[in-house]
Image (cartoon, rainbow, N blue to C red; front, side, top):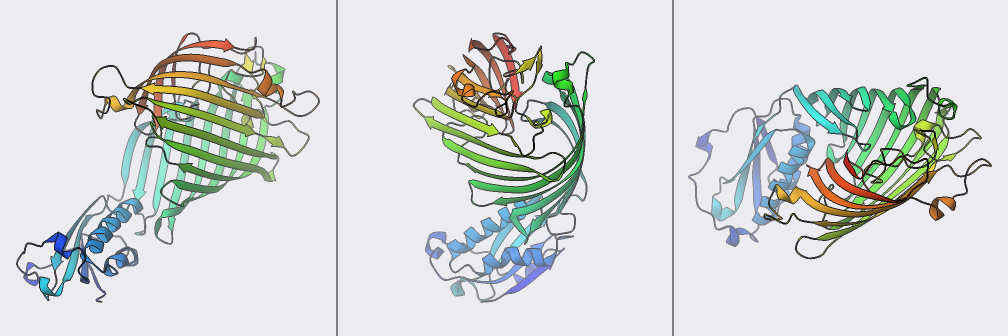
Amino acid sequence: MANFFDVTKEASSTDSFLPAQTLDLDALAAIPTVVEKVNIDGVGRTKDVVLQRECQRIFAAATFEELVLSIDHTIREFQRLGLFSAVGALIDVGRGGPQQHNYEVSFFVKEPSRILGSLQTTVSGSGDTGLNVAVEMPNTFGAGQRIRVEEGFGTKTKSHFSLSFTQPIQLSPLQHITGALFRRNFVLDASGLFNIDHGVSVDLHTQLSPWIRHRLGWEGAWRFVNSASPLTPYDVRQYTGHTLKSAVINEVARDTRDHPMLPESGTLVRGSCEVAGVGGDVRHVKPEARLEVNVPLVAGISVQGTFGWGYVAPVTARPVNIADRYFLGGLNFRGFAHNHVGPHSGNYALGGNMYWTSGAHVYAPLPFGDPYHPFLRHIRLHGFFNTGNVGSVGGSQHHHWRTLFSDFPASVGGGIAVALGKFARLEINWARVLRANDSEIQAGRLSFGLGVNYS
């Protein structure tokens, strides 16, 4: 089998090609095939070793069907690595003619600009919306690396800045490592606090299968929490000041849903654990889990069940810092104001070191139009029932964990859910709170929600 590989910036001379001939693909599918040569036209800064590695599967194709599939796979790998902004492919007969079943493969590629700029809106898991300005250098050193500088402003995250560098591992688009420097300035509005973080992070991302992804990371941050108002009570202000956090995070997720924001079928199982205390003065273990099951019924109607749980176990006698606690309310507990479920000091939320949520949902298409129209597919009628609780457990002054499951708030309602692409969802809901504690702040019957995480 030939293994000649040619990379050039110019198109190959047409004199080397035989006249075009019509091929019977069905007849050729199982016939032994030999690839004589691979040409890649339009390469600039991409390294030859990267291209040769990605094209090896083409030379290994034993039949014409395998050759077509390997070319398609190679194109997708080129794009996933970010090597090219456009890729085209041509299969031509080799010098021996079609009777010898020898072929040449030519790729026609266009590399992305060295510097790209973007202006985009973002939505975080807490419902924080913002405007981001970013500058990227794709395929920076010719092997799929990426440098990104980002500056943003938001409703809760007043400002943030990050400088990140991403490097594929062993030239694989399924595994990469990212290092970042960041600064975040955001408010904990439900608690009357603001937080300023400066830090560095390193993350290893691995796609274990089409549905399973794994993340192993470390983050070190210098955090400053302060009161946003002189009226903030002492129960909240006691957590103000400087902390140094160093944490290792391990996360595994299996996601078979057909859509991340408005799924009709599939499941999501996600588990994570954060261990803080590898340096710094913040020490805790923080496991968390989420389960979501979606079942289609008839006529575009589907049902969904969700459950989430998390616990922050302090390693020392010091209470868990308010910046590391859990809060509920909003999309993760409809009917209540954002982050206002659970313990309070006056109107200020204290959060807790343990939470759980569950939800039962029914989604249905709009009563008019084609429910699978590309636009209407992302709009659904939505009925829900939410339960859950958050609080501090352990210690003499806290509740026993059983109280979180015996005396918990609940809400029911319905509305319209709109998927904003695959990155966020908007909800307009009418909700009625069935059970609540006196200190918890309700959102009113009609509410709006925007975010990434929901239950």
